[in-house]
Amino acid sequence: MIDSGHSDRTGRRLTLRPVDDDNWRAVADVAPRDGQRAFVAALAARYLLLTERSDVWNSLAVYADEKVVGHVMWGVDDDGSRWIGGMVIDAAEQGRGLGRATVRTLADWLAEAGEPIRLSYHPDNKPAAALYTALGFHPTGAMEDDELVAELRPA
Image (cartoon, rainbow, N blue to C red; front, top):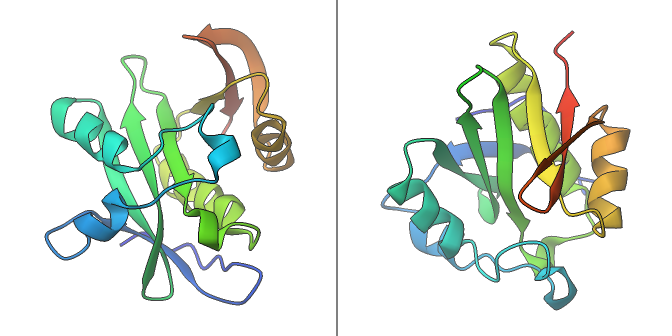
């Protein structure tokens, strides 16, 4: 379990946990708001499948207290940089600061390696850009597929 002590706006403690036999169905069913589907998968199940078929990505269940509320992936690139990807907070849980707490929790954990932390987002995804900028990520000028790459340097 990854626990940096972050909470959502309602005071629920956010933790990141391995996807396992007990929670994979709840994680697979996580779905964003309809308007977000241009930027993320319609269901977190797509990301679970990606992690099963990839040597790079690792899936984590996002919990608020003891409830599955989302999914996020992490990976290590060839250059040693750490990546955050495939974040989906369930539509019914959005607006409570869970996305922010998820990125902060995972970034804190990934920063322990001392390598840059990267993520990417579509240029039209203004809420994502605002969130990542507020958390200290800076655009690198690079593109990954059709997404902007942003980076956070560990302190």
